[in-house]
Length: 105
Image (cartoon, rainbow, N blue to C red; front, side):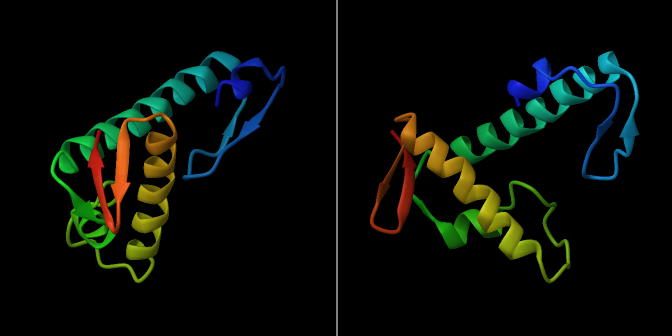
């Protein structure tokens, strides 16, 4: 995301139903908001795995979707999102994996 801050563009087209953005300052504010969403999700994940948890438990906990959201893709999206966070946190030395359990270091 840091690279996006330095791209000189007139228009930005985003996912997640944000549409076409034609103002750099608006784009940067939206990018800040998106980074905060990621940070909030990551903190919730870290709080949850302060005691060891399996991926299934993490998926059930839901760091992306609200509980009881009934879409067939929810579990797959939750798992993929959690895995991306966990991979980054493991590389940073913040999380460890022992067998099928993840826990804060």
